[in-house]
Image (tube, rainbow, N blue to C red; front, side):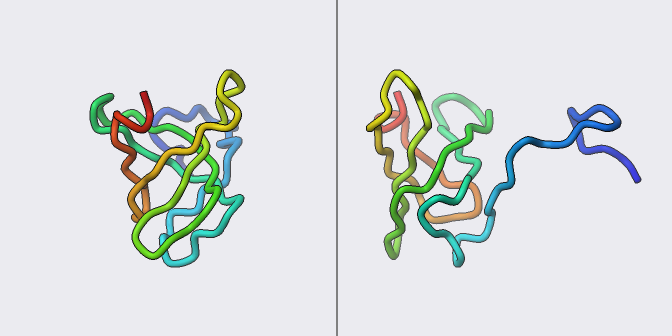
Length: 84
């Protein structure tokens, strides 16, 4: 049994992600991307699910009410205009 890239033996990821856009629901933890910031993964919580997009909270304590619109795919894409 090996480890995933970036993990050390015995370490586990503290997050359980939903990567299935068909089952997204409010409260799910997702890994999202902001193309303007490269392929760096961010962690957010889905606040609302619509037919073609999701609203995500970046869980930023400085902006607790922030809502970002992301694409409805396994790792949602959030435009820089929403995230920055």
